[in-house]
Length: 481
View 1: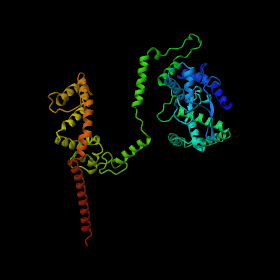
View 2 (view 1 turned 180 degrees about the vertical axis):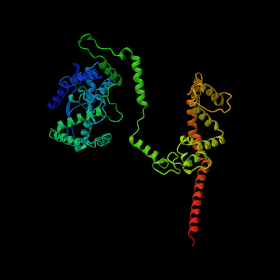
View 3 (view 1 turned 90 degrees about the horizontal axis):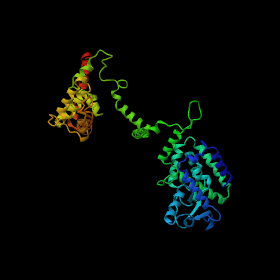
View 4 (view 1 turned 45 degrees about the vertical axis):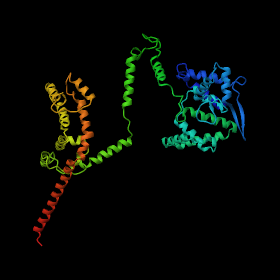
């Protein structure tokens, strides 16, 4: 191990004590790491350890390697392991945690054959307890692209990660590139064999912390262990000697009521899962589409067909609202925006009711209207109106029976035991979505709606033509040829 690595390890250990323990002692997997390190130290003993050698391969040398066969043989001989499969499993766990690695593969596994493996330097052991950041990974990948070596070429997933990181850190990519260039220059000054070993060890370190897609990241702590660890570290705070105080660890409310505490955590996590996360670009697109759709109906952006009755003395607007026979094309066109727009307009609701009656489903709209009217009823009359709606639409011998699913029917039956303003909410919601997804779509495709839309346009065009004729006639009378 070089002086730089030993100095870095000592510096990390000196800067990480918490309550008399190192940061590694607080890691849930620390006991596993400690046992693995003891085993690795035994394997690296010069006399009784795994035979490590430098192998000649064609015109080059492969330094400090051992074969999978030698590793498994050593484990069967020196450990309390009788089965080769058990030894392979143990070796695989040690490789997955980054204590040894294959020199030619990104997948950290061990095979009982002639594949070459190498021990990881203690600087990159998990017990040093430092989680690398994305900027460190970006520097490493960028440095790999600067070295024209076949063994250092980026794999497909690494190239994708580099492109993603370059987009993420676009503002400070120049700084990352300078760091990678400086590290590359330092590496070139090293001995060739030493550089080979260090490159493979660094690559193995990132194979542990940024594994190949499909492989498990063993550095991630189990969430249950982490929660228990954080809970104990937060609740077991030692109270120092103060007047009237106590020295024993304080007991929190969550310790006294663990079930309530867990229920609160479950509720909080459930709320986070149900929260919708939408990209700002998608939100912006939906807002732009909404405003473009309603631009011609906004009196601030486009001139209205009739003057505003609140700021003028013209009653034309009120007259048009009363007259449901002559409908403007803008008004009819707006019904196609949504079912809510159609039902909000009295003329639209009347036309939709006629269409539903033709299809023998007019009771759906009447039930929905009755449920909305129920919300405006005085409190003393609520029960009477609830039973009226029940008798007309939902009872066994109802005059206008509606079809609702079993879930809504059970909810209504339960609510009828104690009727209130919200007794039929689930049934009304079910009927609304039934009209929205079925009847409303068919109404927009029906000849009835198309005739209304075309009829309104024809009336407008004829009215405009008459005004043009009247205007030209008056000019001729005023200026005879």
